[in-house]
Structures are given as structure tokens and as C-alpha cells.
Image 1 (tube, rainbow, N blue to C red):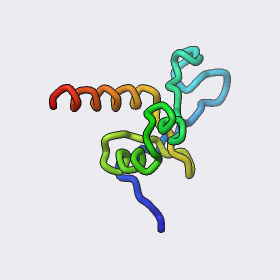
Image 2 (tube, rainbow, N blue to C red):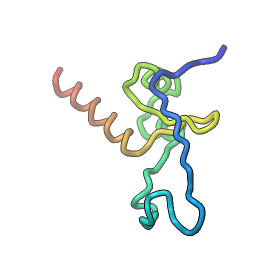
Image 3 (spheres, rainbow, N blue to C red):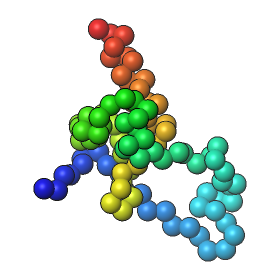
Image 4 (cartoon, helix red, strand yellow):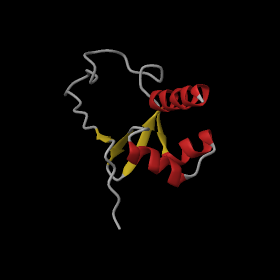
Amino acid sequence: MRQSFTSVITIHLKVPKGNKTPYEGEKMDKETLPQLLRVTDVCARLAMSRSVIYREIEAGNLIAIRRGSSLRISSQELSRYVESLQEVKASK
């Protein structure tokens, strides 16, 4: 059975020819690039099961990036998701 994820973004980056980076000559290093985490990494960080993470992606609560057949979640998106969980908890 094939699953479909409604909140998955597919990214295609075209790197220009020559010595330029995709960001108009901006130097790219670990600070400027978002860290992309695997679903298993997110599971370990949040102490949640894979099925819960996939359900959150399916529900649109957690946005994932599809690269080929794999899903990745940016560290910024994970931070946003954790903050949203804290807001829900605080409102109860």
C-alpha cells in the first residue's frame, strides 16, 4: 500500500554553472544551510514513534521535504513544531 503525504514539499535545486553557489555568490556553510533530519532522527529527538511522526506529516502539523524516496524535516521546522506543541500544552 502506498502512502501519500499532503504536506510534503519536493525541492529541486538548480546549481548554476561555474563557481557560483545557488544563492547568488553567498558563501554556504553549516550555519547558512538548514540541517535536514531523517524521520528516525526526529523520532529520537522527540521520543515519538515513526507512526506518530508520519501522522503529524499527513495532518500537516509537521512539514517534510521529499528528496527522491526519502523524507527530510528541517531543523527549523522541527523547532517550530516543538513550539506549537508547547503552545497547545500551555493553553490547556
